[in-house]
Structure formats: structure tokens, C-alpha cells
Length: 159
Length: 158
Image (tube, rainbow over all chains, first blue to last red; front, side, top):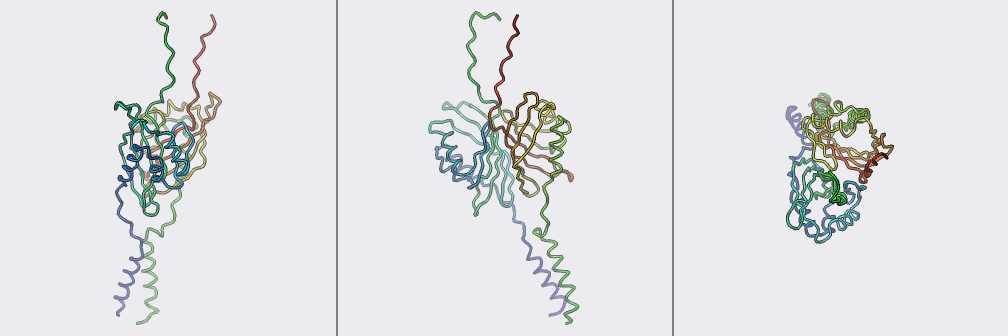
């Protein structure tokens, strides 16, 4: 083998040792869709299974909810059968090697289809053992929650 | 073939190959100076200064309010939300490098000096680099409890 061939072979070996950056994957929308289906079916265990073991919910006006078991309990408590329906829209996704970011909006609908609340969310997804799961989930409404009803105004009160 | 003449070539090629590998890059430190600048501007009620710490396409997602987008709206938001009366401290902060972004999460305590009350909450952020400056791309936070109920002012006795 001449010297040029040896150098060429070494150059190829050296370059081959690099970890090539994989092409970005698409956002795992099918998992997000599964979340919506399970939530609508009041399947708290099924919803919780879509989070990492050390996932956190960051709900408004509440402390952080940490871990899959606590998330299941939270979902069971806040999404009882017969509760309002959720509509979720993905607004933006960024996919990295083992993480993904999703921003979206939600609408809470009453039994007659009227909008009860709108809001927004940010999520951090994590790939664990080849499966995409939600790792952080934060949301809030676009308006303060309704307060207690105002007291009735006496009909004879002067303007 | 003289192996002593080949040795420098082998070393050179190996080094060049390694230099081209992404994995050999030193871990990039989180741009803490940018966060420190944000906190300093926030705690001094410097809304115009705060607005400059967001990327042109940034959005903030405040609790109980719609998304706020763009410099002018973000400056206006902070002018109203903190006219220099709130002091914030962050803790339990974790950061993760995500491609060209930094993800940052943590908890905060906000001292409302006019009320003498401290409120606690949590936040998540995504930072992006624009012309070598690290700026906030997305920022969301919420308190751990509903805000205190504002008692109506009692009419002064006649």
C-alpha cells in the first residue's frame, strides 16, 4: 500500500468515527393525539402513562405536581367523567435529539359546545427508551377564572 | 515505507477528524449573564431594558392573560406588571441545551413591596441566540396560589 492510500484510508476512518447528527424527527403528534383521546375518555392512568416517570405538571395557581402517580391522581381529580371537553391545537413544535418543545392553545367546551375557557400551554417532551413522553407540561387560561357571583343589586338603588 | 514519516500524518488526520466531530466540543455553559441582566432589569422596574432581552419573535405567556408578542407589547406588559415594586428571586433552576436553544426552568419568589407580601411560583423559558446575544424566545410562569383577593375600599365615614 502506498503512502497516499494509507493516508486516505485513515482520513475516512477518522471521519467515520464522528457521530453524525441525525435529521430532525417530526414531532410525535400521534402521542399528543393519544393524550387527547385518553383525556376525553377520562382515562387518568392512560394519560399519566404518556408522561415520563419524573415528569412535572405546572398548573396555574397550584404547586408543581411531580411524578407519574401524582399526575394520574391530578388528572383523575380534575377530569371526572362528564366534565367539559378539551380542544387542543398545536401552534409550534421544535424537535431536538432527545427533547421536543411544543406550544399550543386549548379551549374548554361545555356540554352544549360553548367555549368556557381558552388558554395556552408549553410542553417539554423527552425521548425515553425510544418513546416520546411529556416531561414538563405548563398551561394557563387567557383570563382569570370566574370569581364568585356578584351580589344582586337592589332594584331601588340610585344610579 | 518509513513509519516514522507516516506518524505525523496519522496524528494530524486523527486530530482533524476529531476536531470535526460535534461530540468533541466542550459543553457550552448556560448564558447566566443574560439571566442576571434580566433579573437586574426586572428588579429595577426597567421595562424598556427588559423588552430588549427578548428575541424579535418572542412571546410571553402570562397567567390569566393572552399571549404577549413583540417588543412594544412586552415592554408595555412589564410596565404594568412591575412598575418597580416587585423584586424577584429564582431558585431550583435547571437548564438543558436543546440544539440552538437553552431550556430553563425553576421556581421564583416575588416580593410585592407595596403589599409586603411574597408570592411563589414556577416558570419555564426557552432562550435563543440572536447575533451572539442570548435572548428569551418563550417565557411562561404561574403562581402557586391564586392572587390574594383585593378587598374593596371602604367609603370614608361622613
